[in-house]
Length: 242
Image (cartoon, rainbow, N blue to C red; front, side, top):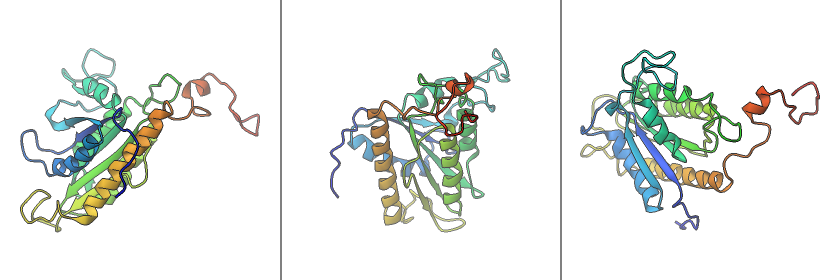
């Protein structure tokens, strides 16, 4: 495989593991995510890791759900600090196990809280997540990997993340009770299909993030929420259509 000549050392990535197991319990999702992390770190990418269940992430769609803010209903919410770590990264990778064919409840709450910041703008007047890229990793012993990738990547691009080609990777064990990804004789770490997809996803995330960063973010033009709200005319052949 030809080595990339691109310098990725100025990139930051955050991996959010949405396992239901608190630390230090073994997470098979983390086991698969570690392969992507290793590729990024070998290319000089700075990696931050969050196991979401270790924090109190309150339900809701406001930036802060503590009782001292409008709409708040909890005495503690760790989300504001976690959001800063996520927004500090050029790359977001969400990892989740499969439960009943769906992503974990922790992953759904993460998406909800990300959505709570979707109305904020960057310094170009674009929505806050513009200029960042995202991918998803899933593990499990039942069907649902592509369904989870479809839903999660749609949610992330809807918020403003750029989704590169083949931005998901998964490992599925035998349907029903049986070994999970890191278990002995599971075949998970040796799966050529999973290794390939994890590698392609990781490199495509790095390439896309590098392009966006070198351009100073996602191109500006016809996509400013501030200009739209101010009633400024956008370039359109119909002058009545702003």
